[in-house]
Length: 353
Image (cartoon, rainbow, N blue to C red; front, side, top):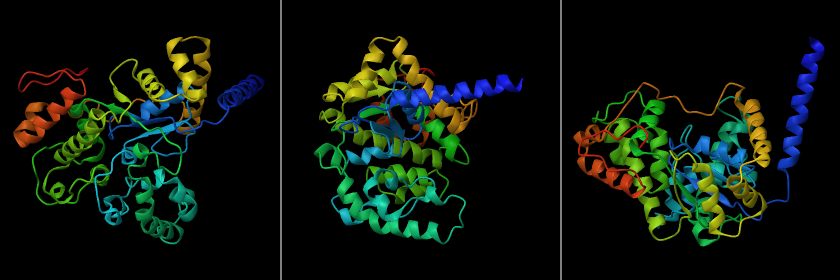
C-alpha cells in the first residue's frame, strides 16, 4: 500500500541519516590512508571496502578526510624528473585520464573543476578551466611531486603509502578489455596512444614516443612494468607501508593494519583496525552507510565488482614472451617480488594466482 511504501522510504532516509551522523567524528589529523595501485588493480572496490569500515576515503579524488585510493597518488611519492618546469604530468589534458587536478587540491579554487560544468558546451567555461589547469599545473606539480615522502605536501599526508597490486596478467587483461579496440599484443604500427596509457607513463616519467610503436595491449603491459618497478624501489628502501595483493580475502583489513602500523593512527583509522580485529556489531553500521551511498551513487544493483573482462580476453606469459621477451621477464620478476607464484615456463598462472 501507499502507507507501507511511505514508511519504508522514511525508514530508509532515517537509517541513512543515522549512518551519516555516526560517520562524522573529530576530523583526522592527516590523510592517514593512501593506497596506490595501477589502473585495473582493484582501486574502486578497495575504496568502497575501506569506506565500509568507516574510513572517509575517496577513489582518485583527494576529498576524503582519511585519505584516498588511486593510481595517480603514486606521484606524491615518486619524483622521476629533474626538470620540474617540463613535468610530463602537465604536457596535455588527457581526456578521461588527466588526473592531477583531482590531487592538486590547492589549485581547485584558482581554476574550478570540469565536473561543475557537466553538460556545458565544449567551449566557454570548460575551455577556460582546461586552459587554467594547464597554466597552473607546473607550479602545482613542483609542490606535490614527491611531497609525501618528504613531508612537504600542502596537506598533512601519510608518509608511507600502501601498495595495492593485482596479478599483472589479470590487470593487463582488464585494462585491454576496458580501453583497447582489440587484445592483440603484436605491434600494429604508428598510432595514437590511449590516454590511460599516457597517464600512467607520466606518473613514472616513462618515455612516450616508443608507446606509439606498439599495440595497446603491449603498451599497458609496458606501463604496468614501469609503474610497479618504480613502486618496487619504494618498497625496497622502506618508503612504503607495505604491499597488499588484491586477491587476498582479508586485503582491505591488511591495508588498514599496515597504514595503522606506519604511524600513530587517528581515531577513525584506529576504529577501523579494531573492527577488523573484532568483527561484530560495530562493523555493520559503516558497511550499511557505504551500501546506501553506493545505491545513491550508482544504483541498487551494482555490487562493486568489475566484470568488463568476463569471458573476453585471457593472456598468458607465453603470449607476452612471443612479443617482448625482456618485458615478459621483467613482469614475471615483478610478479615474484610482489608475492605471486612463479609458473613453469610458458604456463598460464592459475586464475586465482
